[in-house]
Image (cartoon, rainbow, N blue to C red; front, side, top):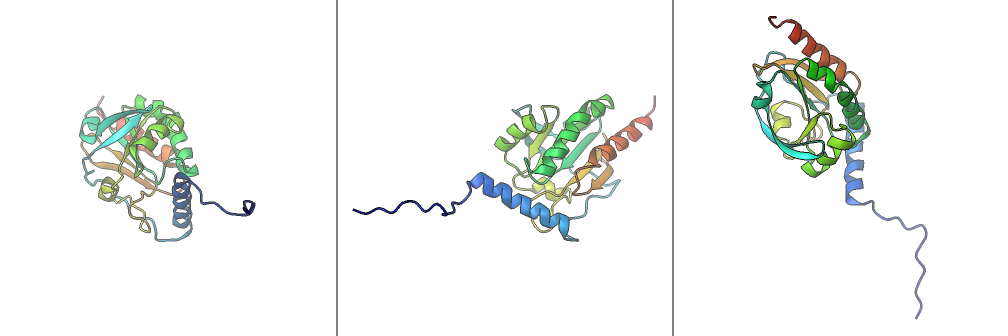
Length: 199
């Protein structure tokens, strides 16, 4: 009985996780390259929609409620497209390094994407360095409420950062697919808010 040897040039499909990551990377590349694909963010002064969502901090699951977080001070809510893609990892590292500065101003940092909670448990440790929480929006409901979706793929978040006052109003909406600049812009908005508070 003759059996043929495996073809050394046969291509095999990448595993599902790798295919999803590759697909996300291609979408992000398109969003960066083509004008008009990024959706407009909420305006400064607009009411920030309240929400609750499953999240992870230092690998541990918890339930995040925006209204509860705002009782402690302003919230920096930043949307990012996909965990473990290069730009989102860079941005998470930058927010992790700056988290103590935000905390010193009384602000809470929260990241949000359409990733599932199991992915975010890992991301909260490896990329966020256990410094701040990330929450899941797999149905993109909150992403849409905050006008943070990518027009080409409405289920995926654009790179948009908000600063929300304790009164639930948008103090800053910063939108750029470049991960650099989000930390500086949001930290300045928080510092300006703090400086305006009565002593």
